Length: 174
Length: 335
Image (cartoon, rainbow over all chains, first blue to last red; front, side, top):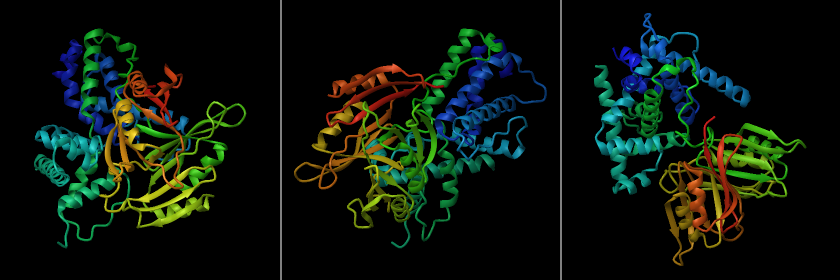
């Protein structure tokens, strides 16, 4: 098992990270107020998981559920800190610390994580388009300039990439 | 062609989503648009490749270094500087110094639905530092002092409804420069007002997305400059900025340019008419303060403050450009 391998050799934590990064990030990003916070918390979760790995025991709780519980606690802690710093904020993220996630929540996380993994499988130019548009939030004109294409071609590329992802996701669920 | 292509429909909806504005209602939406937008919505939360890779190598270093036996410590610090912007701020935030910062904060709330995120008072009841979220951007505020006198700023504010926001600004005490019009050269619906602190507000709603700057933030500093064309190479050299659209007159004067630094933009033009230079303060988050500070000096800026680690968790420096604007350069170091 990957978990046991990593427990006896922390250098093998890599494999667990590869398997679960998108799940943890998807869970946190849907609840964090911005990207910087999502990255901070994801980093915190994996560091805690690595540090506490020797304590993890299989007791009917899958490893991913253990990770997500660490994540839920990190989100709750972060919200408490934010509430102290910015008491005027009125949009607390849902932070289900202290309870297990519902099956529907787990399905939603899995679905989102699968989408994130699918992006990495896209043809190179579509992948670049997706990162530049949705992560870097570059304009169509900027992306066109960077990729040496016309704005019209970039809009078509955007459509193809999103259609491609939608089709992959539907196949994954079929 | 009566119906617009799916590629155009999707792009408009994506653009509206990215700038947190209401999309223009589609007259004949393609059946595929809604499911594609669900995918697009989810892609907003796609993790950065650089973050994924940096965290992995950080964990690898830690895994091989400590053999995992530091479990009890539980104090493994998160990787530092995986991101370099303080949460809530973008690459460029206007730092508006006014006389009467407390009243100015009330104006921002009443006129622009500003949400106060932070307020640090001075012992004598003034405001040392405050942050207000406006739309998907932010404005930093403080009371003027001898060292940092009041510096009114021009801001291009993108909103869902320019007319309603313009009315609110006037109700909150601003005076009209001109009411929103569709005849602005940008093609956007655009009005302008001056608040009681001397700041100029260009209140606009993008129309059709093509004429105005894209990928925009709600709050964009707008610099009216003499010899504005020289600002572009300065910003490129100092901050690695990218000029996204430069419109010049036949004589070479910059009629309008949008300049991108990191994930935000500012706008410049040649000072004209009543829109004369207003040297202001800008807070810029960069991955490496020391490097950008050195670049800025090489590009012709003068030093205000050398790079230092600040007690609030930033590494920060300050420079002044040849036009008199102050640039506070910062890298967020984590908590």
